[in-house]
Amino acid sequence: MLDALLGQVRNTSLIVGLVAFIGLLLQKKSVNDIISGTTKTILGFMIFNIGSTAISGVVTNFSTLFNTGFGISGVTTQVEVATALALSTYGTEVALVFVLGFIFNLLFAKFTPFKAIFLTGQHLLYFACVLALVFISHNLPFAVVVIAGGIILGFCSAALPTLAQPFMNKITGSDSLAIGHFNAIGYTISGYIGKLFKKSKEKSDSSTVKMPKFFDLFRDFVFSVALFMVVLFYVATIACAVTGNVEVVKKMSGNDIWFIYPLLQGLQFAAGMSVLIYGVRQFIAEITAAFVAISEKYIPNSKPAVDCPAIFPFAPTAVVIGFVGSLLGGLFGMIMMILFKSSVIMIPAAGICFFSGGTAGVFGDAYGGWKGALVGSFVIGIGLVVLPLFLYPAFANLGIAGASFPNIDYNIVGTFIDKILSIFR
Image (cartoon, rainbow, N blue to C red; front, side):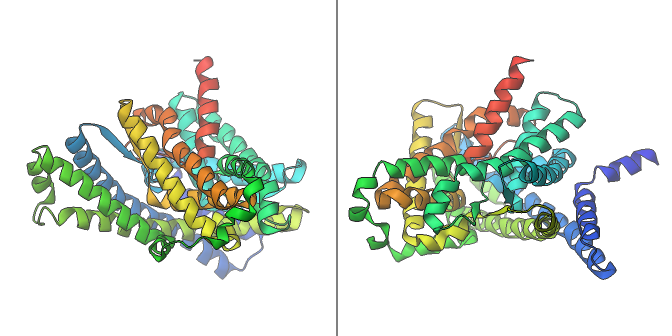
């Protein structure tokens, strides 16, 4: 009986449901709203799990094909997949770090000069995964993992947007909005790179650059993921055929025609991603709403830190330039790994290159025009594939393999903590 009860306490969907329930109570919502909000939260997490299961199977298939075709270990930098893998094993630790991170964000915003309230819930979840995994990899007690992870997540949620705020003010023309995307260190770097081209800003105004209409397709996240994964599957399949391992593809394809199999797998990955993202948005929305209501009431002068697409309208051409620059940087980083015979090859993901790379482009463009956007995003693109190499071995030992957490902030903060903890091992 006790074991069964403890098993339910460690059920992540129930934990996030409880958080939503408490948040709705604090807002003094009606009984109907409390029941509806709590149920939606639990269902959202269950939907997330369905999507993650579908994606995990496709990632395993891709890894098999890629490793067979190229004889190297290929890892996709798809944060949603890495998060799904982490939650399947360490869901309780991650969920509690996530919740405490929200709470400590409010406390830091209340009592320190860092006034950002981080509203991009899915990024809090991703960062919670990284922090929890770093502490777990050092065999620290459950309570330490949760409390230390929550404090660090809360501090980063308030402080890192502040780091990028001078550039946000330049982009938006006001001091009312912060960037709520855990690539703030990267965006700041891109902004400073843009300043190197400040003198040529008038001659390199990004708004005068005409980009091919084809790149507009990548504004649709699901389409970009589908296209990119189909291409990757065909690259791996062709490599298998060239190296005489086409039988591996035929065996994996089962009743499907083997040369149609990569198309179906890429589309299935995108379908699973759609389900996963829908689930994330549903359970995050209810929890975020509760904390926003609390912050508005009790934290004066707080500043909303919002997701990166909020700044895309300020420099739309720079977004596309940033996507291209980031993708080129990621491919350059991948080629360097191959040339230097890295045991693991990080593969850039179209989605992360569009959103993080596109935002880096806007920051680089603020002072440096299209030159700043291109160079800044190129450098960030390299970081998106190279930095995950530092933490990947530790995560792989925990069973989180086949995907990585690419964003700059996760890896710089996570690697710093990992190195500090290694001293005391």
